[in-house]
Amino acid sequence: EVQLVESGGGLVQPGGSLRLSCAASGFTFSSYEMNWVRQAPGKGLEWVSYISGSGRTIYYADSVKGRFTISRDNAKNSLYLQMNSLGAEDTAVYYCARDDYGSGSYDYWGQGTLVTVS
Amino acid sequence: AIQMTQSPPSLSASVGDRVTITCRASQGIRNDLGWFQQKPGKAPKLLIYAASSLQSGVPSRFSGTGSGTDFTLTISSLQPEDFATYYCLQDYNYPRTFGQGTKVEIK
Image (tube, rainbow over all chains, first blue to last red; front, side, top):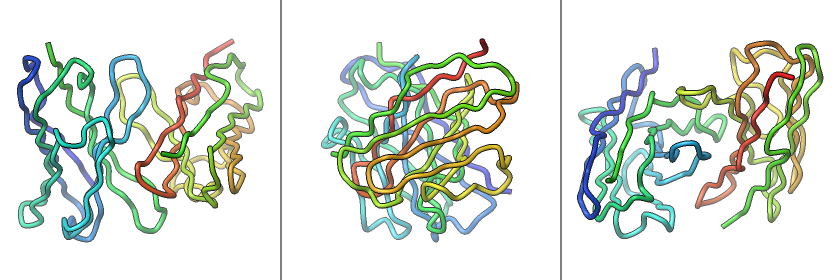
């Protein structure tokens, strides 16, 4: 069974840093592209970042470029999001999502981890 | 970035109703569009990919059509468990962009 479990969220002061993790199981992690998607309280979904299976190709939303860094450790079946210079606008639930090459869309999501900047 | 304009923002409907939600892309995206359902406090769930392909396990009352710039999600007969918020997502290029969402409420 495919599982994605995020961790690392919490309360952080403006200007602070946080590192999110996403532990993957039930599939060959290194074969899949991965993403982070966030949702501010009461708002819609916002794509944040993408990383290829090898980790060589990375994209970011303009809103986080230069502040957030996506990475992965295929040996540990884990995805990460290092978040620096956090502001109130970064307060959100952060989801990791698997990018299915068959469908071209996000077929599995984690339960989300809440980041509060205050 | 491609803008995805979703409408309506919300709608009220009754069990058994036919419901249609639309998404318009600011430029052509072929059929590179997915539809997601999200219930309160839960992660989104993929319903439709490639504009019209039904994700495994999703009831056949959900269907998607469209290509280029105009897309539609249809629920043929609304069920109690379908009351949720629905989002489209273009997977044509980066940055990926979601529609603003459509909240389907009980009339």
